[in-house]
Picture (spheres, rainbow, N blue to C red):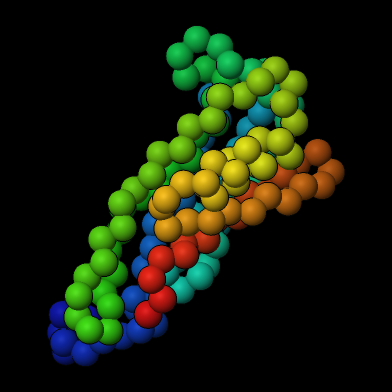
Length: 138
């Protein structure tokens, strides 16, 4: 609902979503976010993964981590849906190619109970991970 008019603005609510960020703590496998917002309206967040992994070391070394932020949006009936954030860590194996990393991240996301689903696509020594919000349709 708009605070000014009290009217429901579907376009504004569809544009809301989770900020999608990622970080690599591996020396040779990198991840960069290409689309950093996963919206209620179906816009996917995307990350590109490149390079073969060095692999798991001590602590956080040798991992890739994704984060989807907390967000809220209003439904047409005026109620507010609160969507929890999600931290997704993945320990890498030595020599793991980006395609396997993207598939492992997608499998983890798809097996979870959170309102997100992911796909992995590969080509030319890089992989693309796409994440969409699958929560309640407005």
